[in-house]
Each structure stands twice: as C-alpha cells, then as structure tokens.
Amino acid sequence: MNVFSVPTELDHQAVDQVLDTAGQMGIERMLFDARHVRWIDPNGMVALLAAGAELKKQGGNPRLQLPDNSDVLGYLSRMGFFRQANGIFDLLGRVPKRVSRLSDVLLEITSITANADVHTVIDEVQKRAGHVLASRLGYPATSVVQFSVILSEVCQNIVEHAEGPGWVAVQAYNWTKRLGRYVVVISVMDIGRGFRDSLNDEHSARYGDRWGDSTALEAAFLHGLTRFPDSGRGQGIQQIRRQVQRWDGSITIRSGTARIAQVPEWDITDPVVDGLKSFPGAQISIILPAVK
Amino acid sequence: MMDLTPVTIDVGVLVSKTVTSLHSHLVTRPTGRAVRLAIEAQMAGSGAQSLSVIDLSDVTILDFSCADEVIAKLLQGYLGPDSPEAFFMFRGVGKSHRDQIQVVLERQELVAVAESDTGVRELLGVIEAYDARVWQLLETEGPLVREDFERVFPEPSLDDVLQRLQKRRIVFQSSISGQYHALSQLVDDTL
Image (cartoon, rainbow over all chains, first blue to last red; front, top):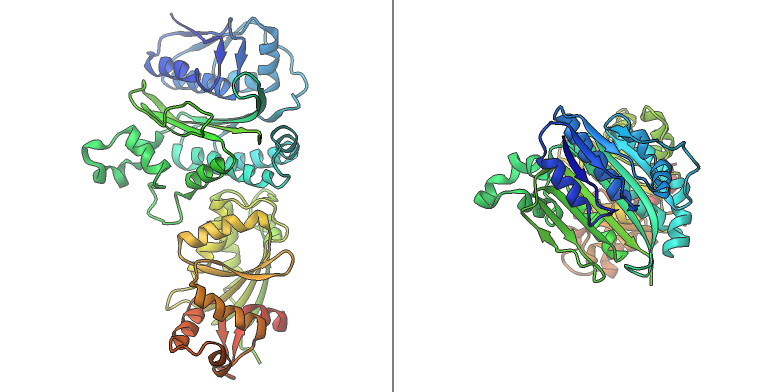
C-alpha cells in the first residue's frame, strides 16, 4: 500500500503535494493519511476529493485516514466534505455527525456535473454571500452580483470544457498572519480533460513545438481562446480575471503539468510554473481580500 | 402610422416558462440559449418588421454566457441581409447587468438600445462618438426628418451615418412618412 502523508496545513499553497502524488500513483491501494492535518481550506478539501476521485477513476481504491483534530473534523463536516468523500474514499476513523453550518461558509462543497448544478450554486450563494462580502471583505452590497457571475462562469468551465466531474467550495477566513485581513477563498477543481486537451484540435498547430500545458493555459487565460469557433466564447475566464483584479485578488489555474496565475502585489505566487507532476483536469483557486 | 409589429418580452417570466426548472437567475449558456430560442419563437409570427422590448427588470444575476446568448446572439441573428427587420430595446437594464451586456456587445462589435431601471435610454456596445451624437439627437428630439438632422450635423457624412444607424437596427425610418424614429419613441407609441 502507498501511504501519502497529507500536509498539516493543507491550503492553496500545499495542494500541489496532494495532486502531484495522486497523479503519479498507480491503481494500487493508496492511503491518504490526514491524521496530522491541523488546518485545511476549500482548496485542500477539494484537492483531496479530486485526488481520490482520480485514483478511483483509474480503478484504484483510495482510503482516507481522518484527522485526529476534532476542530478539523468538525470543519470538514460543516463544509459537507464527508457527503462528497463517501463515494470516493474508504473513510478510516469516526465521521462526526453533521453540525450547523459555519457563518463564514459561503458555499459548502458542491459537486458540479451539469448546468443545473451551476444554478444550484448561484441560488445558494445568493442567500449568504451578500452579508459575508459586506461584513468580512467590506465590499459594496452590489458585489454579490459580480461574485455570483464569477462563480457561474468558473463552474461552467467544468461543465463545458472539462467533461468530467468537479467540485466547488467557498469560505471566508481571517488571514491574520498572512495578510492581516479577511479573504474569501474560492476553489473549483475537476478531473476532466484539462486545458491542453480541450484546446488541442483547434489551436495546437499554431503553437507548433511550443504546444503544451503552459501554452494552453496562456492561450485560454491570457488570450481567451477556446475550442469553440464562436467568437462569443472564451470571455468567461477573461472577465473573471478582470473582476478579480478589480478586487485586488489572485487567481491561479493548474492544469496538467503547468500553473498560471494573475497575482496582486500581496501574493508571492509565480505567474507561470511549468514541470509539475501531471494531474488531469483543471484546478482553479481564487482569493479575494478585504478592502484595506 | 408605424408599420411595425410590437412585441413585449419579459425575460424573467420567459426564463420560468422556458427552462425546465424554475431559475430566477440568467446563468449558464444553455439557459441563455433556451431563452433566446423562446424569444425567437415568440417573434416568428410578427412579420417582416418587428419591435421587441426585452425586459430584464426581474433578472438579478446575468452572467456573460447568458448575456452572449440573450443579447449578442439574439441581435446578431437579425442583422443578416435576409433576416426580418427586427428591432430590439432592452428595458430594466440595471447596474448589475450593464457590464456583462457591454462586454458581450463589444466582443461582437454590436450596439443595442438600453433603458436603465431609472428610465434613462442609452446605447451599449460599440458605436462611433459621432454616430452616438446623431442617435442622441433623435432620441431627444425625434421623430425627425433628414433636414432636422442636417441643421445640427451639416457634415456630408450624415447620410452614411443615418444609413449605418438603420442598418444596425437602432434607428427606424418609416417607409410611409420617411421620418426617423428612435426605438424608445416607437415603444412609447406602439406598446
């Protein structure tokens, strides 16, 4: 059995370790040992699901040893993690009873497989986002519209381009140490075909030998290219980038072996990273900070 | 008399009627496509010339994919040389819709007449500044005949501009009176 020791702080910066490992594993039994996890954010939770689902898709039998820390367990429960994990992992340990939702949860982990799921996400977010965006981030009341549009477009990316299952989760945090203010973290991941495969037929020829995961990400992220010949397509990611920039937020997309990012001054993430271990689909993280 | 068939379309109601589940928000491309097809079906029996008011008053969330279908593709579908002469005015366009509509129109180099939720009429999309001034005169002072325009815009390009505004379906010229009408005036007169 392969054992992967899940990082104790599983956030947007640590998820690569999970995805790299899952992407390289065979279909033999794989244990994700999360006993020592002390902190996990939406990216961490969704990455665990994506990693487990990928192994399962390949015919494997992923197992998840639950965290020892009761706060982490309770948080996973409140975020609806176990509901999603049940069909993916053999869960080792006691799953806590479902308790009331955290006040800063904008969206529990929600699976996205069809457009109807996107409608569910938008309906759910409408109930809570306005209050959290205003009280935690200091955004104007109308920002809930732009926030919903971002979520809609980023979730549609799974349905329209990934052609595979995906998940979304949104939570507000106080990033006291890292940034000294609240942030909202949006995590959207899928294990579908990824950007390179999605764009391959239409656009690979013009890139020649340069074609790969990073050029495919650049094509979609920076130039708005899609596999559809329709000129009305491809604006979703462009407009997400624009709105995230207006809010001084960061957005990163990992797909295949590459990651591309639009980073504000407060973020030290590299704009482009190549040579990661291959993992299918696309993994998107958006971080929106409170106004100063 | 106007020789136009008036059509009023409440998108909020149409979304409920058109999409299988009841969705109060205009999100996702399939939803937008369904709404656009429903609008087109509603217009199918309206003759060679029609004027439609698309009411967005009850739409809270409009995403880019839906805006592309319900606004840009709808307009684009009636600009071809063999298309029926269909005019559209978008009513109830709030701040929450404006950016998405502007973006999808810009992308397709289209222009549309929009009436804000406070009743202000404006052009969204791509339009030359001079053309917009000509349109604004008609919007404020119309109906007008060519000579009325000429007094304010004596430049020789005026005929080209009027022709362009007509071709882009944001100005209507009556084949009976020869007068130019802003779409908002037609709406006020006919609906």
